Length: 106
Image (cartoon, rainbow, N blue to C red; front, side):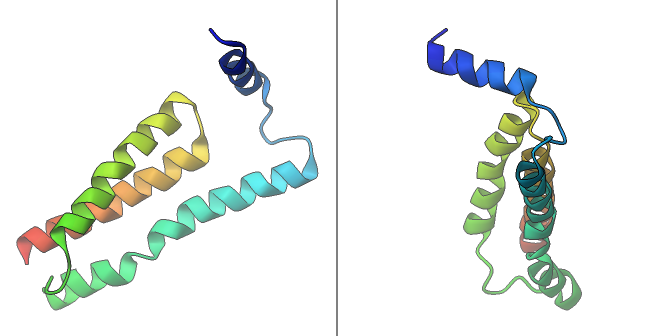
């Protein structure tokens, strides 16, 4: 193992949560909020598709790749035990998948 990777591995193993430094703790909270709030911005698209039963002008390819490229991020978050990444990308995958399904249905 290289020294650089050893340092990252060592740092993650010893990191405390919540972090004792108030600014890092605040940043942790902000990032968790963003991880939850960010995916909520696709709700208007979901409502448009499922309420109006129309996916006209919505790109299947774009939303498929949004979903597809979120999967490695979720796996990365799980492997590294990074809660904001896990929560955020699980929500992105859920909402993006619902849009893809809606496009296929309508």
